[in-house]
Image 1 (cartoon, rainbow, N blue to C red):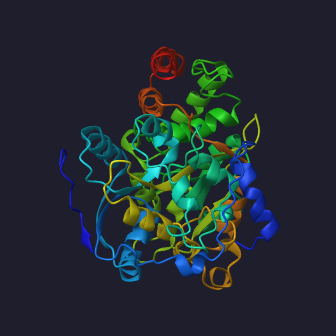
Image 2 (cartoon, rainbow, N blue to C red):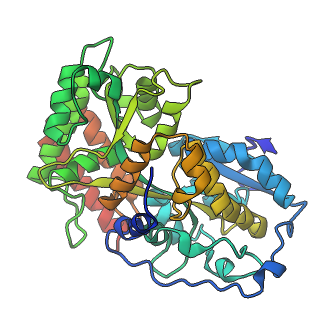
Amino acid sequence: MKQRRQPAVGSRGMTRREILRLGAATAAGAAAGPFVLRYAGAADAFNWRRFAGQSIFIQFTKNPWSDTMEKLLPDFEKQTGIKVEFSDLPEIQARQKLTVEFTAGSGGIDVWYTSMHVEKRRFWKSGWYADLSKLLKDPTMTAPDYDWNDMAAGAKQIATQPDGSISGLPAFVDPWILFYRKDLFAQKGLKPPKTLAEMEEFAQKFHSAPSLYGFVARGLKNANAPAWDWVLFSLGGNFLTKDGKASLNTPEAVKAMDYYASMLRRFAPPGVVNFNWYECSAAFMQGQVAMYFDGVNFASQFEDKEKSKVTGKVGYAVLPAGPAGHVSPIFGNAVAVSAQSKRQGPAYFFAQWATSKQSAIKELLAGTGSARTSVWNDPEVKAKAKMPPDWSQAYVDSLKIGRLGLPEIVGVTEYRDIIGVAIQKAIEGAKSAEVLAQAQKEFQEVLDKTEK
């Protein structure tokens, strides 16, 4: 297994009934549609070593799921005989690289970790996703125990395009939750905040810079969009109107911007305007921050004794509610095969293996989530889980109140950039109404271009 080759341009305890309900919650009421796989006699026909001797290039995005998968790659190579080369990059850089490679038609990337909440519509419209629906139905290409219908309905819906094609095999559905220092909360006799107002109150109680900061969340342009979107939803706003127009200059949006920017400006570490999840997590792991919210799968690093100073001191909870109700932004991630790849067979074998029940169990044991419904009740997972029970409970409860955290539009990256700049300016002291008026204008221009 080789690493980091750069392809050249141009060349907790839950009942099964509970977990089965997660899919409908994550789909936000959307039906994924029937997709029944039948494998009569397929066990004899399936051969994991069908592509032995061939090689593939995988583009990973830096995150705990990818970290776990990279460690498991030797198992894939041993099982299949397929050689793997890979690269891993931070999210924005990885997406830039993918765009350059696919635009050039180099064919250098065979399979990649795709953030469907960002790439889904744009990459599909560009023709960059291979449609995996036919391969899923082919008993010579999909193992009989893969079980597509074990995927949460929401995960399947996120991976399925308007034309019914399947652009990736779901890796996990990622709700956002609250991470908090339970030891510090216990010292003050506090429980996790239940409302946005309590979160602000508690941040002020804990804030004692520079030894301890009360709160942190993403400040960096583009990366900060889903964090602010949660506050927007909680205060009754939305990024789009019901008829698909921009909705960034409403009173609810102004209140959301006032709240979010003020929390970061008053209670976060210096330089937070340039913090992505990595910098937020690092500050939290070093014991510098009392509260932080982000994707549930970032929590595994907090329980790593070699990396974290707060192992065993972190509590996990559903995000606080706002005046408009209780919501958790959710995001879907998958393993996709490039439509340009000349090695789609072995690439699909990797996507299938990486999202199988066996791999999902290993991922849960490592502290990352899964899109599958059955593995949460696996005996080994229950006996050896790395993460504490409140993490699993927060995961499940958040999925039940899940809502897609970004608009499903072609120009989702442009949306993230536009609102991201507005958030940064507000953190730095600009008036919320002014930055949002500009964001409204720019976002509507994007919609007029891309959503025809």
